[in-house]
Image (cartoon, rainbow, N blue to C red; front, side):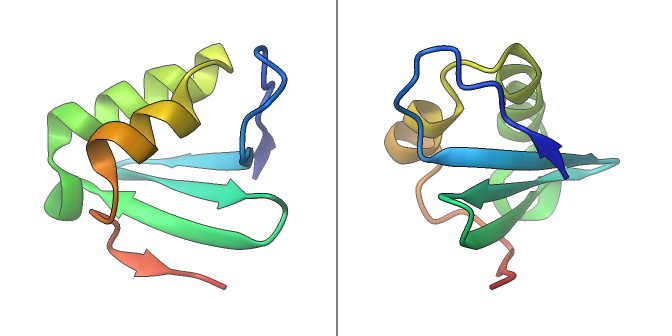
Length: 75
């Protein structure tokens, strides 16, 4: 997993891993969730990937727009 840059300084996202048709997002060095094209839609996943790379806005986007559209909880 790649460390989330957290440019705003108050994100719950700590790491992410971009996958071909999804993204794995870790929150607070604890729970990790896999979001996929099938669970959240391609447009949503691509936006999440871009936000992850930018290091800004991913947690807010998930809490406001994506919510529980994850495919699986990893831990």
